[in-house]
Length: 462
Length: 164
Image (cartoon, rainbow over all chains, first blue to last red):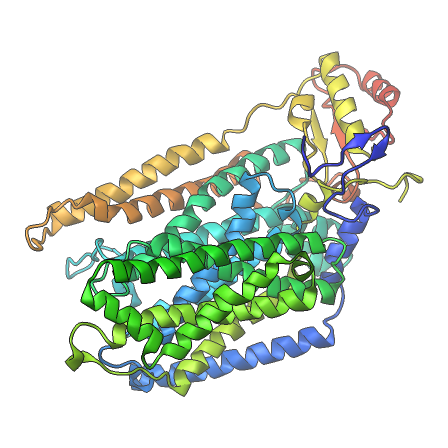
């Protein structure tokens, strides 16, 4: 029995669907396209101004950094990786929840993904773009990024395929490419809907090109469905592999606190955790601003909050295991790193992290909390902050006090570090706000396929 | 016609009549339309799976060649073809090629290209078909005179019949 389709008993529709009952196909199209067809409101305009201002600040900082060098950042010896790499891991992690919703929930036939997958997948693409920025700019000579690509060159040099830094190049670029293509494929039928509704010639032309001649014929749909499932099968292991590879940046090193086999599953769970929190943050704002409460219902948000709770427990377990194994191993360096995390100069980062990631989400055990918009918004912001500090904690505390005390030093991010961090958020929000205005924010075709009453009972000529 | 059930019913009955090469238009994929209309399985997954294997193989061969043939470097006596270290790139190359192939195959088998319906003669039959209406297409060749087709469709309960 498929819980997500209406069950008809004695002629009455019994089980609740995922979209409010009275909505029909026409309304889906109208509602979904309203943000695209209306002029930007005050909130959107304010948002995009702030986001663009942040990007401007970031660009100014980067120009200065490229001229003068990475000495303006806080990184030093031994802390060679700081806020930039924290941001890299943070943004890649955020991207993973989008793919979870689009691909993995599709494979599990969870129909409730249909209304949120467009937004989530868009978030993935933009997050990975933000993430990809950081490996490019964190190097000492950022004008030489082509060194990372294995192409035949006059020095007969190849890249070091055994290094996780190169695995990252392949993983993140594959992830960006496949996510973008998957997202675009999902958009094609909706772009055709926009094209067919367009009254303005320019709009019809542009969306006509983008919709590559989609007409909704049975053959179109047949091919489309097979390709979509194929992408889902590819994207699901990709999610697991990409963040595992990012975790290998740390795990294949030698320093205590980094060299841990728990990292791949720990990072993947953390990625889903932080990504889902970001999805909740974005969706809570978006559904209110654009009147999508009938489509992205409290039930959807409750499901997402349950995922947040689950991954919070997984991440909490990982923290506990790291500490336990460090103690159990009787390895003095490993034990020291963890005592240093709790009691050293960066103890405020780990306490923030533990509070935000492990303690705060426990409120979601309560059904009232899971269904309360202010609570879930506050929790999602906490989780985002906590996960950022988790990455900061892992990177900096292990680096700043490694084996030899003569090698120890503290790391303080400078205002340029923070400017670029803020700028990456600006980039993300700019792309997201543009997406809201240019593309349908819910997947029109998929939402229609799960309506309870797709067509009004009254006269056919709607 | 206005409902997906109608589409499936009309499509199945046309197929039972023996008419071939049926097509249909719908704003979303209706559950069961492939069987009702008798469509063949798409070749896209086969293409993608093939390229997954080829991509992975190419990734491995390239890494092995650079490490053992083109510029072998002895790092502490470790094997030149250090295959465990090559696995991440092999996997990613396979997935990348499979993903690119899937979209290319979709465009090829579905005959999509930017500019279709904009620059060329492909027509959009009815704008409501991507919104909330459904249609069954019965091609004239090999399926009998159009009057017969039209009358049968009316009998099945189609709302509008358009002949081209």
